[in-house]
Image: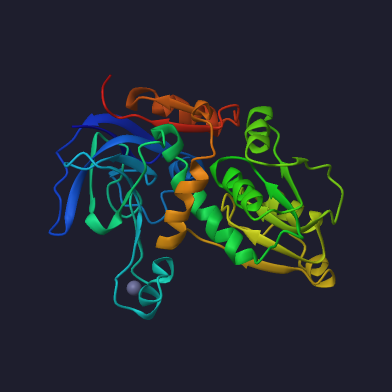
Amino acid sequence: MRALVYAGPAVLKVDEVAEPVAGEDGVVVSVDLTGLGGSEVLALRNPGARKLPLIMGHGVVGRTPEGTRVAVNPLSGCGDCAQCTAGLAQRCAGWRMLGVHYDGGLAERVAVARRALVPIPDALAWEQAVFIEPFANAVRAWERSGATSADAVGVIGAGGLGLGCVAAARQAGARRIECVEPSDERAAAAAGLGATGRDTGQAGRYDVVFDTVGSAATRALAVELTRPGGHIVLLGFADTVPGFDPVAFIRAEHRLTGSFVFDDAQFRAAIDLAGRTDPAWVRVVGLDTAVAALEDFSRGDHSIVKAAVRPARA
Ligand SMILES: [Zn+2]
């Protein structure tokens, strides 16, 4: 089959690879779409835990051999430790992510565990389903924020994660939801999901701020935009340095929460939120054009709300 292979430092190439083989409790899913996003761009700069060669791609939707339409929950743990027992596989010492620790969905087919399959409704377009994985991160971040309808919410970045935060805040009835987003196309998508406006830059404007970018600059901005006593939730990890002034943070008595991926219930909850997206927001590319799409994104072209790869040949 054909796959987009992360072959070596900063090298992505389309290649003919061996068919994936399902494990004992596994299944081979025919990929319809796999989301492409910030994590793939960051991974090309720094492979981190990834052992190359690797097929990336963790936001996968497709069909089982029986023809069932599914989204794949990409996270798993050892299944036995206290964290896994509590449903928190991301805190397991042996956590594993599809497309990071083993071959993912930037290929015509992918082998996954049967328990990772979550059926999706026929009414949900593939171009909407591709938002399930990023939105699941946002469902968790919203829950961890403890925010309520009484809160004014700031969201930094309106890619998949940020749009999910907007959708989660809207579902909870937050009174004001504003985005920090330079791209007019992404800001329009945020408005479509219930954002009430764009950030004005006024310090201390929000009770809760979600930073879905995670650069040093956006973390500093998150601290600045949060009112004294307010709450900052960090999801993005573009930079490894904190970026904000701890003294200002202490004096403002801010609270800081990290949020990483999702549990099974949060992944399922994201299906409903993904149904609120517009399929036209997704730019679908083939394996051959995926590298160009990643390069556009890497250069800072965020006019595409969400890119996704359709690996099957037309
Ligand atoms: Zn475990």
